[in-house]
Length: 329
Length: 265
Image (cartoon, rainbow over the protein chains, first blue to last red):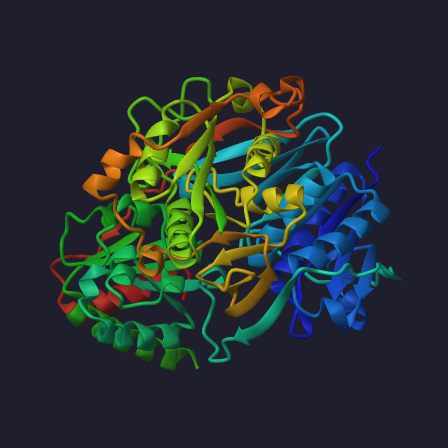
């Protein structure tokens, strides 16, 4: 009989990152399918009092290691502490976020515990007691299903923004167990953390993305996209051509070399749609393409295509969105 | 400074990917192969370290003989020597096994720093570097978009969601590279480089050559296996907003469609 499903959460700046609730919810679904108990691991500094929030997403036991030395994510310390707690809860399946830090943590844990990790999964199923997980390969040009061999614990990291959160039930309170783990000496250290306080939305976590490509012609023209993005609560992305031209920072690049995104709405402006870009945004729920070349490959992926000069269309569209927003408020 | 670059050969990012008849691998016959772009960034960073501190850059890779082409390119760019672990047993196994085999090859080279891509653009598992660091008991600085080293320690900048972290480690350490072409701007192989590369040492090794027992690798030892590949879901055909409309008409029609049909705004 399976013992438990264990989820690893992510805590930053005094609160859980949303992806923590996504993995807890996914963990709940798998635990229900296996008839298993759901436990969660919370580590960091000042995390104890927030730990019980996970109960709302179906977590029954929360294991907490709270230590000032764990304030920032550091592979060496986090892996040691997480591995120690995993041994404590003896799980049948481990689920964690495929966030920047989660991917690093998961991979090193897999090596330390000699288990198999499927990274960046978008679907996890329990088929007659067998766990199967699916993840995009070649940046979404194809998908792989993986299974685990007999006697190994499936480790699965889930792509942020994909797994549905359960409707939180605040009345549910988990048991919270504080676990003391000696924090190992590390040879690496966090020198500084610079968080963007401008309120800019992270591409991989955005519901709406507006991306500009070669057709934008110049860095200054992105102001137009920024304005529209501010109205829609969107993030601004870019194609490789735009980043290579120095118009946008590399952190905005969407594509096979860059970020793979999956927003509800992706608006591609002046992007022709090279296959490596299509790979990075093809799983968006709705895609709008604005391009003056009606033969641009991007139109083959678009739900809605607009053949127009972007320098005329974007301001007109922004104005219409402004009018529409005014009627909503 | 002894520098090792872990390098993987991957299909070109412009490739169209088709599923093979076995349902669990891709059709590889007509693919164009390249150095995994993120490994190319790692190689560029490694070559710059060598230019600054001296020493040598060694390539460690695994895979069939087609990988030689990628290795020769790396040697032409300026790497000094290479090891290719070509053992069919590894192809049957999982990443954990492959990295274990590579760690045996890496240990023989006694590096001060190991550089590799944060991920490969094929199976995109982002595990190789972290696993190697674990097998060596080294710090791992992941997803570097900048790198500085004075020869005793290494400092990187790493983007996280909504910010940046600056990390530092004493050597020996392993660094995996993120970023983009615009950041690393990897050099092209020069013609003299290409000529010289043909004579640079490239050692072929099997698991036995590395002192490893093949019975502990391959399918029997794999923890995780790909059991099926599946094409991405087909998108229903989209529509081009009425070309007869004036600009304002198209704009308001798009707002209407996104609100009423797609319900995304």
